[in-house]
Length: 171
Image (cartoon, rainbow, N blue to C red; front, top):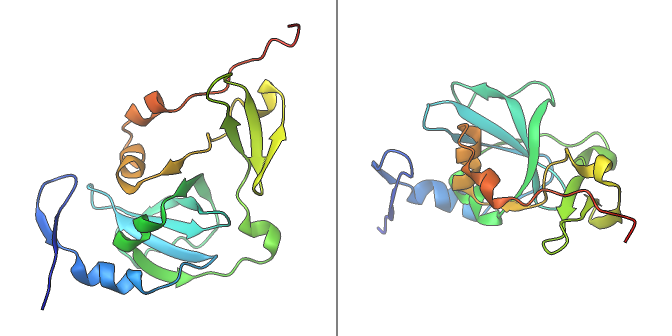
């Protein structure tokens, strides 16, 4: 029997993760799926799959996998890589009431050369003013470890994100 071993990112304990990876590798990710993963503090974070590789991070944290949030209150929304799901526990599927609810709020798409922001909503880039996009979540695809850092209050990820800048329309 083959068993892979991985290092826990936070406390360097060796953990066997083969069974969890095999369990989620064969499962297709569906809209409305709820997954959970454990923070180094022991708390469980719950996420819900939305359209376009976006997950909603529930505000409520749990002490076990059974503490599934009863309502749809999200802390924030981000895009994640598909391989993140391999290490997360599938909890249940909670279908959306309608197609509109399956979409996340808009993100800001920041041009890396000009710094100009645009709305990114439903897979479309839409021109907007600085005031319309300055406080939105920056469009980026997150890996598991930076996401956990963010949830733990570590802010080094902010150094990597270019925020929109006001554009001078007179030139």
